[in-house]
Length: 374
Image (cartoon, rainbow, N blue to C red; front, side, top):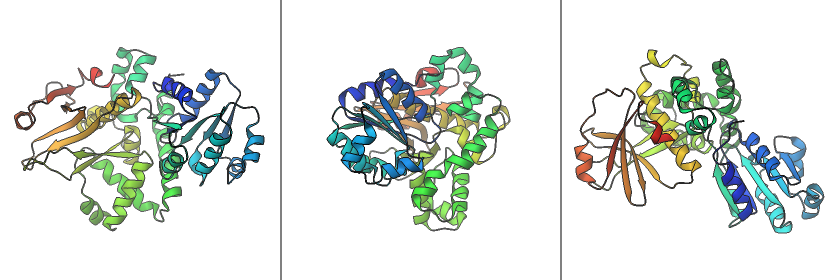
């Protein structure tokens, strides 16, 4: 089994707090991870899957007496897919209040309501950790840099969901199944979306605009729904870990864009599945956008897994001078331009350097990207 880089963070967090809240999209390996951790901890433990009707009934407004009988002598309880319980915060609070020697690992595939509910109930008594699909660094650790470099083109097309990387040859069918069966499940269930076909249209447009600035007005006009509906759907997709956004970087310089944003996908296999384009890299006209998305999300995985705090942006002026990625941390500014082809011509970055002389600027391409993501 491929070791996840956040494994040690979870086990160490359980020594310091009563609970760990592990969030992430469906099918990224949360259940496999928490079960493996529970076995390593080597204490009496129990697994409660909230997709099961009887578990949902047990955790729907239970009393402390009922929970005592349910827990028994167990020292660790894994509550999987906790977002399926409307008042799960009450149940976990009762456990942490009344059973001090019981540890909890709570997983959820949507941050809608779950994070707020559990956070309010376990203030100061839990750590929250996010699980991405496999990272490039995790795959390198499991095999070798050479092997993963050879598979780079495949990662741009099929992404890095565990089921996908573990079953080479069946990627397309599996991605279409994940997209149709799991991708919208939490959005539709928790977001009260009455017209899922609009969600399909929106995701297709976002997928086709990968790496470009997104206009809510344009999306509204093309799909034929209100700005408010588009904004709501994008928010739900972000909270369900399908997409994420980068805002434009600005310190109120007159010629900088200040309210623009770009939208990317947490996994490129999901993105390509949405538009049903699994053509190889050499036959695609969107390889630049795929490369940009890949590098940004891999950088996010790296900093998340190593618990490094930073903020991410893109940068553009009204004269269309731009940099693909800006990262700020503790007052430091790092700017990057992404090029798939190492021999591509690089535009001058003098405008940004003049505005932010303290910044560092780098060019990331497929011959030097490993140090950026590993």
